[in-house]
Amino acid sequence: MALLQHSLLLQHRPLHTNIFRTKTKTRGAMLRSRMAPLTVALFGLKEPPYKLDALEPFMSRRTLEFHWGKHHRGYVDNLNKQIEGNELEGFTLEELIKVTYNNGNPMPAFNNAAQVWNHDLFWECMEPEGGGDCTGMIQEFIERDFGSYNNFVEEFKQAATTQFGSGWVWLVVKDSKLAVEKSTNALNPLIWGHIPLLTIDVWEHGYYIDYQNRRADYVSAFMDNLVSWDAVNARFGRAQAFANLREPIIPEL
Image 1 (cartoon, rainbow, N blue to C red):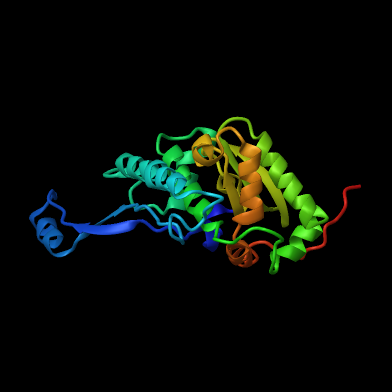
Image 2: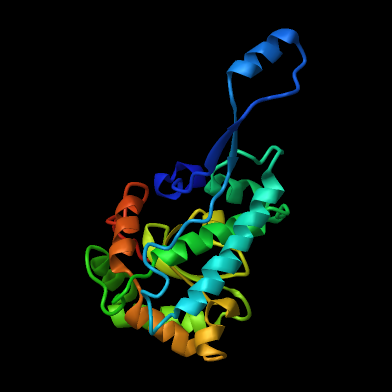
């Protein structure tokens, strides 16, 4: 499944500013450049869809101030420094991830590009008074592919608590089915052609202020009190344009 064919993935457009080209090869080109602006594309820090204290007591304002305000901002700032003025400038964030992953030989900008995208999705996956049993159309497919909602929660929590070191855990569309995946460091399912629906950040900076070394408590709080099933359903609805999730599953012989 080609990454750039997923319209749901092509959502993070860079901010644009206009400058004028100052160096040209011909007088005619110079005159044209004075009239036509050159578009320079850089990325901005996307705000969470809620106030910084809205997720308390399960995720504190202080955590958001550091996690979003410093760590996430740092990824954005460093990415802009890495792409400004070179051939990577002007790509969407999803395109940058695909290009800079470079078939498993990541370019320097990959980690920051992926971490910006990962965090953008992470904030969208939460809401005040969220969590609990899933709702909407995703419920049918979770029950189909995991056997029950409780089975899904158990698998997701197990993946998140056993991910060694820094990384992410995801609910994705993979081969016309829902699946739980782990990824280390900045890696995400886009590089494998899968469609992310839900993610949790299990880097220590994501939970240490509130939970210290109790990652399992953080994961439980996320699933039980923070997950936005409305956001998951919205992404799932767009995913169905690219994956026929109602195809019959043919058992292996």
